[in-house]
Image (cartoon, rainbow, N blue to C red; front, side):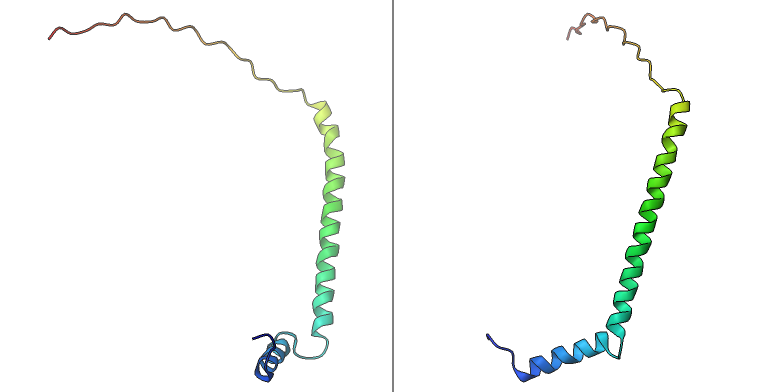
Length: 84
């Protein structure tokens, strides 16, 4: 069980060829991955620029508060029992 037989290696190679078959597939895959990382970084930098512009708007708006009114105390009601 420790080592793989020839049939295991043939199966592994066949799967690898199916996944990455052809010339240049791995380089194309890595290129797409790099483009995704660049797009992510660009999106993050745009969010940072938008976040930097927003505090100016927040300074002009007044702070909103919620006024709380204390609840009125409840007076206890006398208990009444029915005579059976």
